[in-house]
Image 1 (cartoon, one colour):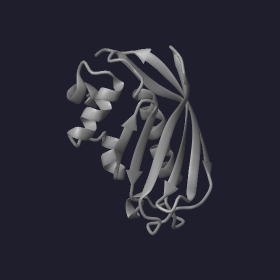
Image 2: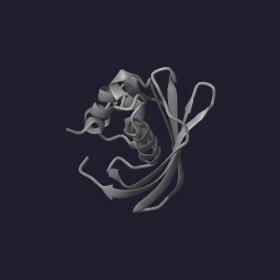
Image 3: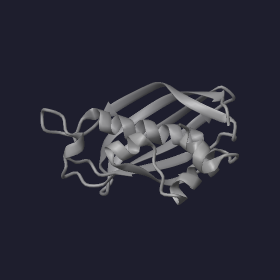
Image 4: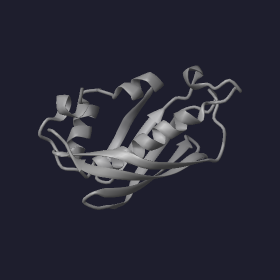
Length: 151
């Protein structure tokens, strides 16, 4: 199942993402973890989520995978925003640095992703995860493979 084909067949990458937002559609992972794409511009994407009990680890903090997923999504969609209607991408490498632990009391967090460089086959992106007060919880760099896909 391709959500971008469902909501934005024939549109370029940014058009697909904007169509998803306009229709209130989210990928399964975003529904499962309770986050959403809230802003997209060429080369930039923002996801927001509320860390809660659904993302806790056994030691009483939000699992690092929650932050990693938001950061991976922000990097990936920043790249997606610059693709043609026939291109796709996949993450080749994701490096996360955790700066501060999150709890259910952290409140709304935002992952802001930006393209560093993009070529015909490879893109590089970076993202930060902050709370409403601007405190940094995690940051990431990502290498992504750009490829042709079935539209």
